[in-house]
Length: 145
Image (cartoon, rainbow, N blue to C red; front, top):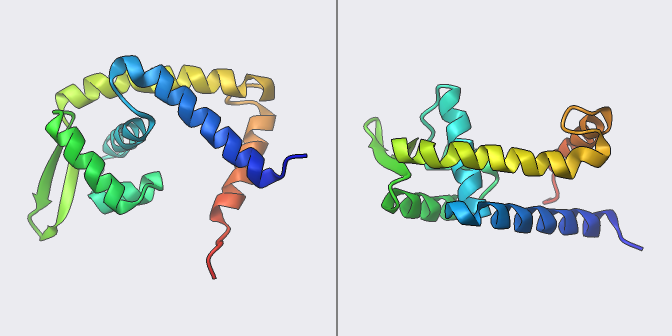
């Protein structure tokens, strides 16, 4: 019998592997996708996030976001600039090439998500909404004392 923690871990692993495989032809990993799609979403909302803000948005470790930012900058997908008000802060922006890469990736992952959530009634199904609410409660629950 599986515990909820084990099932969450297995589902997370299944999702990450599926996204990695789906995005491999585009030259992206799951982590790069999370970075780029989150940055695209923040930009659509009018933000020019710092690396720290993007780390908070994605749940990735700040050091890992910094490493991804350097790599994606070197690949021409992201531009990193120092914040003039605080030179310790690095601001992030998608380049034109970054937008060209991330938009089809977002569509690919959306199709994958549709397949995953089909048994629950799809992305807008009541069971999916309930699952989303429950997962949010768990994510908001502190584990560290």
